[in-house]
Image (cartoon, rainbow, N blue to C red; front, side, top):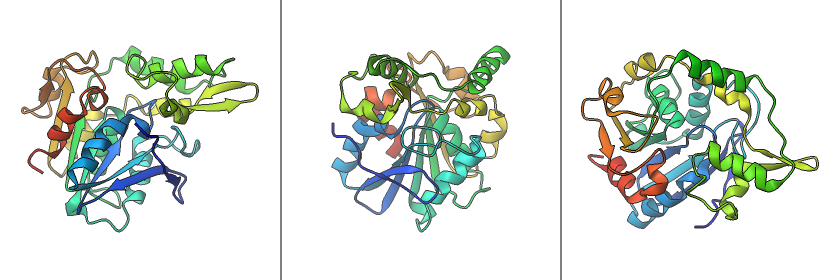
Amino acid sequence: MKTLGGARDAGGLWCARGGTGDELMVLLHGIGANATVWEPLIAHLESQGRYRWLAPDLRGHGRSVMEGSFDFAQHARDVAGLLHGETPARVTILGHSFGGVIAAHLASGRFAFTPSRIVTHSVKLEWTESEIAKFHEIAAKPARTFATRAEAVERYLKGAGLFVLLDGESPLVDAGIIPEGTGFKVALDPRVFSAIGADLPAAFAAVKVPLRMGAGSKDPMVGHSAMQKYRTDAQIFEGLGHNPHWEAPATIYRYATQDA
């Protein structure tokens, strides 16, 4: 797989674009990751010739701006800004985990752009008070500097859910690491974790466009019963974990394009 090429927009969001076709699929990654996690799925999108695609590094992640508000509304505004000039009826938002919650906010009609449909997978829908408190504690601490690049790479891959899926020597890890003095940091502003604990029932109840939900059967963060509270037809991807778009991109391609 090649490393995605992209650039920052006027708002400081790094974004890669490609593909052909009248329809656009917007790929929103999970917390701690960046646009490179979509590389396997992008290959499927481009092979079909039906979709253009757009894949940003969300604010506070990877190559994007590391400042400002990090709540879901700001992320939704950021993504809406990337879609200026697009025809809403031809845009699908595909959101993984944290990105799926951003997709729900975009689908509320409260922002400058409302897509025709949203497809989410691996969204953790149930949070305990202790889990929320833990992540808010992380958000309040400065980013850690690691003495070696290997240590920073390991931390990045674990945070992105790719530790056993991506070789630490791959050039695809470069977007997740930044030099810091004589050491290295993960390219992630800890303040992004401050969004965790937001009212998910309200976010998904406000969705005004068709919604699909799914998760891997081996995903420890998402259960079928939790998804069924929102969508009775929620799908389970047998044998897959929290990152099915990386593990089985053809499965997620079929899921994301079904009935489109």
